[in-house]
Amino acid sequence: MRFDVVIAGGSVAGLLCAREISSNGFSVLVIEEDYEIGTPEHCGGLVSIAGLEELGVIPFRKTFDHMIESATITSPNGNNFTINSKKQKVAEISRRELDKQIAFQAQKNGATIKVRTSFQELTDTGIRTNEENIDCKIFVDARGVSSLIHKDRTGILSSAQYEIYANWIKKGKVEVIFDQEKYPGFFAWIIPSNEGKGKVGVAGKGINVSEAIDMFLKEKGEFSTIRKIFAPIWIKGPIKNFVEGKTIIIGDAAGQAKPTTAGGIFTSGMGGVYAGQAISKFLKTNNKTDLDEYQKRWMNRFGKEFEKQTLARKILERIDNNTINKLFDSVTPEITKEISEKDDFDFHTGSIIKLLGLKGSIKTAQTLIGGEIKKLLS
Ligand SMILES: Cc1cc2nc3c(=O)[nH]c(=O)nc-3n(C[C@H](O)[C@H](O)[C@H](O)COP(=O)(O)OP(=O)(O)OC[C@H]3O[C@@H](n4cnc5c(N)ncnc54)[C@H](O)[C@@H]3O)c2cc1C
Image (cartoon, rainbow, N blue to C red; front, top):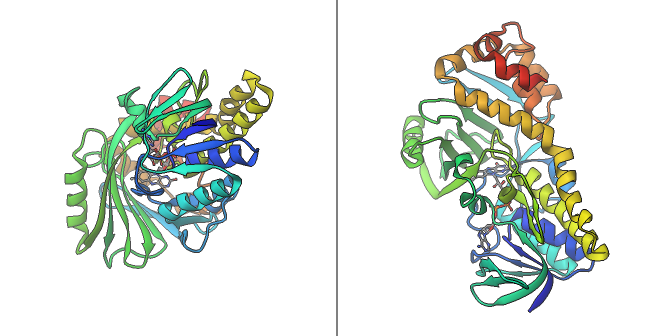
């Protein structure tokens, strides 16, 4: 068997990459080791409508669940504030359906998709799968965080996400809960998929996520569990080289998920789009600099924002519950109003800077974590 391009990983990044390559008339095979595209769904499904549009996806009715209206952020001592997110136009979608929708786009353009087929290793002329050898000019690694585990474990956190039914889940209302003792360096979250149902998750450094999520749910009240997912998340930002000879690394495998929240539908998806366009150009010209364009474009678009998000993450890793409680005390209604009206879900360090009190009345953050803050602002 021979293809111009073989892509390992049939999720958002791999499938978007395949869509771009096949739309330029080149032969492309996507191999997915699971038995179904979109499964297992290990995602909260939060994505901006602007992000989806840029990815070239108008969600089918089956894909789109509902719009998010607000996000309530809670501190360790139970104080909270709410951001009205209507202007940011954030949707909660079904990842299972989104991935299938992109697979359909790719297939219509001419791509071939095979499930239950896993990448094993590179060969001199292409790759070896669990079934056979396949020759290709370019190999794309879109295997998600599992590809990073062998390279660097230090940027990986464990996460647990349960899909549950509970009458305390409110349609349109996301919740984020900080507690450095329970979820060090990360947070717990509730993402509704409708009234009374949604996804509840926790992640953190060095914790037993199964125990942490059980404790969280116990404190919240009655619920029924429909599905349990345990998955690693990557929070260290982009890897150094997206292009290694004729191997192109995209999506979470290239560290393209946000260092603050590990959200990656948009940013990892754009990695797939940019890589697909660069590979198509390379296949026409055979000019290696065309492949390098992929990393340049992604870094131009997201590099600065990811650097700032990495700094914000470092701040979160250093502060304790007491400091977080104090920071929450300095959040004024003017700050939440400004974030609600002006900020961007995909480029959200602006919101973090405002929340850290830099534009608010109390400069708590500067006193507590001065050095890092200066870098975050520069
Ligand atoms: C709990 C959780 C919640 C999240 N919530 C959100 C959210 O609300 N919003 C958001 O934007 N992002 C969220 N994310 C992140 C988002 O899911 C990822 O950024 C996104 O899925 C990355 O897409 P990808 O294509 O790069 O990789 P993945 O989606 O990880 O896909 C990699 C694919 O490669 C396949 N694969 C692995 N090894 C092989 C192999 N050897 N051969 C063939 N195939 C292989 C896997 O089966 C998988 O299908 C969340 C992540 C987690 C873990």
